[in-house]
Length: 329
Length: 191
Image (tube, rainbow over all chains, first blue to last red; front, side):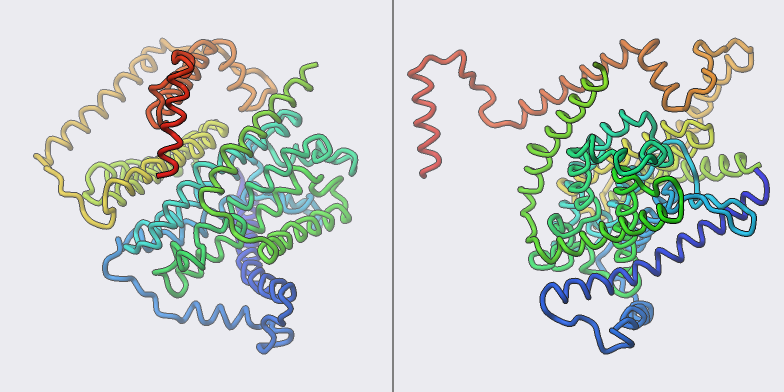
């Protein structure tokens, strides 16, 4: 392990952290604008051009707000919960190839922090650990609404991990590898080679489960504003609440990268066009998260569990069996 | 050098986490420390190059401890301390150090006498995941399948225990009894 490798890794980590922390802020701006236009409003428009500096204003507000620790909470756990959400979101990014490799001043750069050969398993595991943030925050808060949200968090965590894992198993069987680089290489031949054509069911299931993993609107039960206030975030203030937010948005961006990498060809053959294509696909999936929030109501918690165990999981298992049979004969 | 630093760091962290899990009186502290310890253990798998096992360690144990959290939520007010009858603290320390030494002796004894060899040597060119699959489906096939059957039995037992009216069997009842049971069921819905 030489020094150049170490420096390169540190630079990559810092770049990923900075870019996606900033993107999380800008993501909130996009969310507010998209929701506003879909509801025939204008959204943020007074601070800066097109309201763009609203992000900075929100940041200043979050950073300067008093950090309140209520008297009945479990202080250590209460303080560490937001950090878990944000940290695990960024840890998952370590195994995602954001762009194809490119040459900068004669030095070949691989835009992936750690090319481990079990990438997708690692990403799903770490993203699952991210749900410890809402769970711990909710349980430590000494608040009934927070406790309800923590209970829902545990239920979603235990259920939808199953769907994500099973849905991804069929494509893994086809590719024969757990590395996202290998997934990309398998689909490098063009649109005809994309896994979505042979595994449409797995694609839909993974997409649905992604909404549950990130806690977005049809499954936004962990922090459902109109029945349990802000759920696990009720007692939080200032930057601790902001960390929950950064974690959620970073997770949305990362899962929007993973879906195209797994099913839609990723960055293709590694040309500039392919790289731009990956960014475009990522933008579409991020936009779809916002679109769904404007278009769909939330489901009830029991409907969420019903959907997971009685619909999605059997379909996923049947999909695996059929894939296995097709591969065998 | 990096491996040594990482090993000692994670060894220290894991020990501290499990120590907290045993000694604290706060249910949330104990559960969180347990989860953290389980996740830190995966670092040892990564250091040894067993990436697949490391990721599985994270996935399985974070889910398993999550179920413990659910139990904690149901049984305690987790924001309050649990009153424990704590005997002599020196007994805890003495027993844990003794058992740690015993485990080290048991596992290092064959290594010291060089009496240990790999039954299934590494296959050239096969990845970590493939190696695991080969061992699991050749040498350890029977234990692997038996474990799967055991889980199935446990699952059926859980369903029977938690389900309603599982003591009734429609195949053992005659028609009159079945109709009676149906009427009974409808009554309950109406009332």
